Image (cartoon, rainbow, N blue to C red; front, side, top):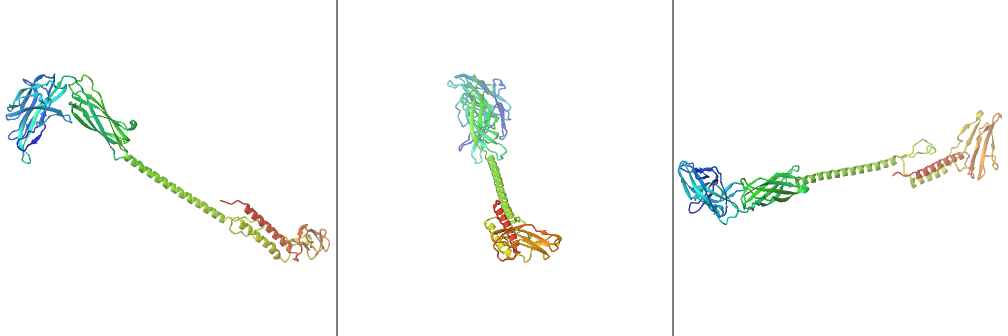
Amino acid sequence: MRARFLSTAAALAAAGALLLGPASVALAADPAPVTWAVQPGNADGPDGRAWVELEAEPGTAHTDHIVVRNLGREDTTFALKAADAYFTDRGRFAMLPSSEPSVDAGTWVKAPARVTVKAGQEEVLPFEITVPDNATPGDHAAGLAATVTTPGTDAAGNSMGVESRVGFRVMVRVKGELRPALRGDASMNYVASSNPFEPGSAQLAIDLENNGNTRLAAGGTITVSGPFGWGKREVPLPAVDDTLPGERRSLSVRVDGVWPLFVSTASVHLTPASVEGQSFPEQPAVLDLAASATSIPWTQLALLAGLAAVVALALLLRRRRRAALEDRLRLAREQGRREALANTVPQAPAAEAHDGAARGPAHRAGPVSAFAWAPVFAASLVLLPLAGPSSPTSPAQADSGVRVDVSITALGLPTVSVTASPTATPTVSQSPGVTTTGTAPTSSTTTATTKVTPSGGQTTATAPATTASTLPETGAPGFLVPTALGALGLGLVGLLLVIARRARPRRH
C-alpha cells in the first residue's frame, strides 16, 4: 500500500495509497474499516491474471475487465482511476499521484468513474484501452486502481484527506520497430582501511538509462584492479529487474578487498536482457563502463616511513657506536704505544753494566739522546785516569810462588809496567829503542815480555807479551795506564750503543 498525503488551505485535498495487483487494503476509519481488492478478469469475474499485458497496433482499441471486491461489512463506493505508471529504484511498480497529470498510457485507459460494491460482494466492470495512431512503437505502462478517500485534519488543523488506491498494471506494447538499448556512466571512490594490513574498498556509483523503447532488465559483473591488473577483484552486479523506456536507475555498489595501488580502475560489464514474458528480435548491445580513482596507500606508506625511520635510526646509532669504538681503540693504541715507549728499557752492554744495575726508563732515540753520550765519553777519558787506583790491579799468581803484576791502564797513557814480586829479579826485554826502565819513547809501539827468575834459579815465569801504544809521558804513575785503557773500552762500547740506537727504526 502506498499512501500520499496532500493538504490545501481551502478544501479537501486528494491523497492516496496504491496497491497494484490482486490485493486488498483495509482502512481503519470509524465506525467500520473498509477493505477491498482489485484484479483483472473477464466478464464472468477474475481470470487469474496479476496484470494486463497487451500488444496492439497504433490506432486500435481493446476491451478488458476490472473486478472490484468489497471485503468490508458496509457498502462502499470506489472511484476508478487510471494514470501513467513507473518502476521505482527498488523495482516496485507505482502510479503517478492524482495531483500529477498523465501524458502516456494512462490517458489510453478509460473506465467508469465510480462503482458501489455491497459488503462482501464484487463487481466486474469493463474498461477500454485505445492506442493512439501516433503511438510510438515499444512498451508503455499505465495503472488502473479503485480508490477510497477518507477526510481528516492534520496537526495544524488543516483539512486533508487520504486517498488509498488498490489497482494493477496495464502494460501495452505498441507494435513496430523495437530498439532495446541501455546507456550509463560510472564513477568510483576509493575508501582506504585504517589498518595497513587490510585492503580497502571501492565505492561505485552507476547510473543507467533505458534509452531504447522496450522494457529491459540487466545483469553483469564489476571488476576492480590496480595497474597491470594487480589485485584484481570481481563481483556480480546487482540485478536490474525491470526498466521502462526513458527511466533511469541508480546503483550503488561496494567492492571490498581492494588494495591501494595508487590507481584503481573499475570495469562494469552489463548485458541487457528482456523481462519475463518479453522477447527481442535481436540481442541488445553489451554495455561496458569504466571508472577510476586514486588509491594512495597512505597507511602503508606511513608504516613504511616509520620502519624506514627506525632502520635509519638503528644504522645511525650503529655507525656512531662503531665510530666511538674506533676512537676508543685508536686512543687505546696510542696510549699503549706511549706506555710501551715509556716503559721500554734499552739493553746495556756488559761493559756499561759492569756494576749490575739496570738503566733508567727508556727514552726515544734522537740527536739529543745520542750526543748526550759525548760528554760522558770525554769525561771518562779525562777523569778515569786521574781517579785510577794507587796500587797494581789484576793480580796473577805465577808458578812456584812467583807473582807477576801487569797493569795496563786506560787509553792515552804512555807507560807499560812489568813488576815482579820482591823476591824475584825481573828481566825486561823490549823492542829496540826502549830503555830498561820500562818506559817507551814517544810515538812508538812497545812489546814487553816479562820473565821472572827466582833467586834460587829453579823456575822462570814468563808473562804474556803485551803491546801498547805509547804517548808522550805525562809524569803520571805507572798504574794509570791500565785504568786509561779500561776507560777507552767503555767509551767505545757507549759509542757503539749510540750508533745502534740511532740506526733503529722508530715505532709508529
